[in-house]
Length: 486
Image (cartoon, rainbow, N blue to C red; front, side):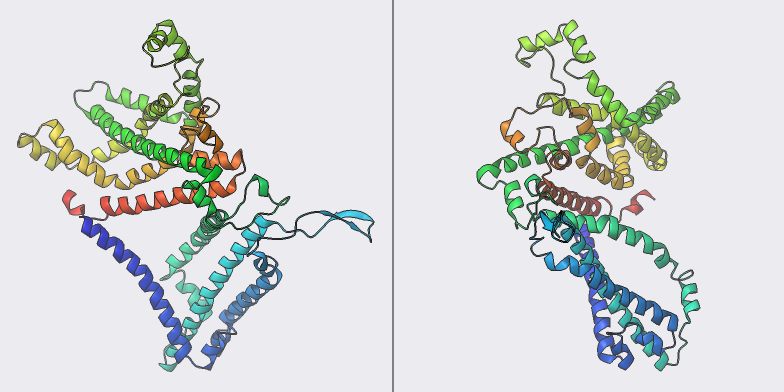
């Protein structure tokens, strides 16, 4: 099974590099074997189409080339030359002898230089791909003309994008959206991680610059004052993984067990119980979390009840607490356990609905055969129900784990304004023991404007999620087990 997963991953990577290699080979062949108009297309993008009387395409490609040149001259060249330094001119007021007023000089903005330079690089990369693809296409037109084959008119090409190439038409806008709103921000996040962009270097008042791998050295325990970041990172990362594991699998197993219980013939009024659990889903999660936070606050109703029944005094007498209240959400250990328990209460109804739908399609013949063979309910659950659930809901389970790594709402809404760290090393890094990497990242940006460390942590979160997703999908899904349940 593991060997199949590894082979599947290697095959996927090999397919990607193979496609890139074939594209480069096609471009090289077009340049080497193409006629004069194909070679002229290296300079004038519309030359090959004009030679084959595809004048509309020639005009479109010429317009694209002109647009790229104008973009480079009037936009990119204002920022890209400063990319290496991220700006050198600070803002200051200068007396203008003509207007007899103090005016701001033409200063640099490091963030705009970084952002617009990156955008220019992406546009140039897209332009290079279009340029290469254009040369390949006009070479194919040359081969068609030499073979006496029909060359489509512009109208016929448009028709093909509604018929046999309709998938390209559908995917164009989503790909552009992913590039602009996902790919570019991720690249920007990566670049910021290699700068000193923080509160002391905040554009436009101040400039920031490149600082290499210093942020990563700080995060992983570099010397000096930054050692606290390494200390905090290890603890926050550990809690993030512990939280993601328990938050995912407690609700997953709990949802399956609750669904089996409600579907059992021995359960009375199953519809009523199912309706009650579904109603809890209708309440917005942030409302539930804020209410629960108030219930379990140091002066909340739960602490009042515990004090009245003597539980608080008992716990203090045996040394579990040293305060006049139970620190459900305000002390390490207590807060960690309570967060997981509260998440179980919130998350199980969702998993119950998913499990109910899957269990309705559980292979009944396998279950009946197991019962005839004398299998007990636990053996059926272990050998049939759970393997089937893992197979069908594997993608959702992987998604839930990644989502819980980035589960901002539960942690932030339950602990913000309630939990205050007493660990000076954690406080120096603007972290708390109950923070996930994502909430730590949020606090670094919103409260302390430490964008350089936030970006570094963001890269680590991305790597963790990507590696886990690749591994989990290959192990749980890519093993060709469909035939086991047919």
